[in-house]
Amino acid sequence: MASNDVQNLIELMLLSGKCVLLVGAPGTGKTRLAIEVCRRLTGCEPRVVVGRGDLSYEDLVYRYELRDGSTKIVLGELALSILASWIRLVHRESPIWLVLDEVNRFNADLVLGDLFIGLDLEHRRRAKILPLDMVKTIGRDEDLCKLITDIVQLDENDVRKALQHLENVFRRYGYLPIPYLWRALATMNIVDRSHLYRLGFAFSRRFSMILFPSVFRNFRSELNDSTIEAEASVPSQAIDEAYRELALSSQDIDVPSDRVLYSITLTRGTVEEAVKRFERVAKVFNYIAKEMDSLGIDLGYSIYVDLCRLLTVAHLLNYDDESQLADLAVSSLLLPHVGSIAPKLRAELLLMGRTRRIDALANLFDRVATVLGTRSRSAYYCEVLSLEVPAAIR
Image (cartoon, rainbow, N blue to C red; front, side):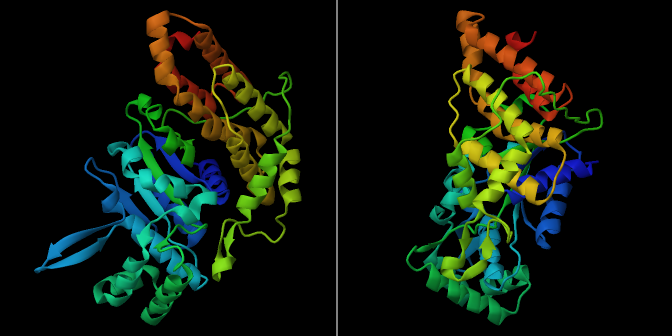
């Protein structure tokens, strides 16, 4: 059974503009909680896709089938989620999110490849989900229009009006993109814990991973930062970008209800206040980032944009558990970058034996456990990574 702590962490990430991946053992309630969080934050049932080995991008978006001697359009759950969200947002209603269940059952990098760029907030308008001609066809097709009407729970006339509005405002694009307020949640079973490091970087970059407690493992974070040497600041450029992204909205196309974050108090100063309030979190984040730099991992300022967005939402919600917040930031935003080089480190170990980078990885594991606690999510993720590079265990 998941605790309220897990739900709070999920909601912090979602409200900051990230999609979320829940990772844990089978039967721990990941799917149920993902659906409950969608209901809690949107008031709507999400669309759900259950992973399977032959799942394709066309299955998620749309495909053509021959039925009764004619070609019919079959809309996938991703397209239904996006289209339904836009229709509801036009009428100032909440969106309908997507749950990708059991992503370990299909090749997520291949299936979701065309979607990845649109998961970044700044690139939402570049995601070509549905051609505009398809939107027109849906409005004229009685069966498809009825399907959409049932999903959005609005009057059919309101649905048709919304479709016409979307045709008009996205005419210059030629396609329907992803709303700023739309989110996806994914779940992943780890019967084999090494599945974690095998996640593609594109996926782990866009989906913030939250490790799920099991019957025999409950996570408990600490914040032992008194002896570490690190700055408690973040790049000014990251603060600027975080504010810009959190303030993104579709006001320019007359859909004002579509915005990343609803807050009448949000300013650039709000982001600065958040970083200052959670300076211990920023200090630990910088400390672990510096250790990762010694591994030869180049970190762009985008991870600091994600950190600033997360801290801003925590500040606006008056979230006060700094140890959990630091653990979440490190395990979800930083450590997946280490996972991306684990295969290279393993090959280096086999070819050259213990090297400076292997020693640096061992130091990283030790320091994560020291600063955030041996029972933290971050320490557990390091434990999983150590399965691929056993020499890094001391």
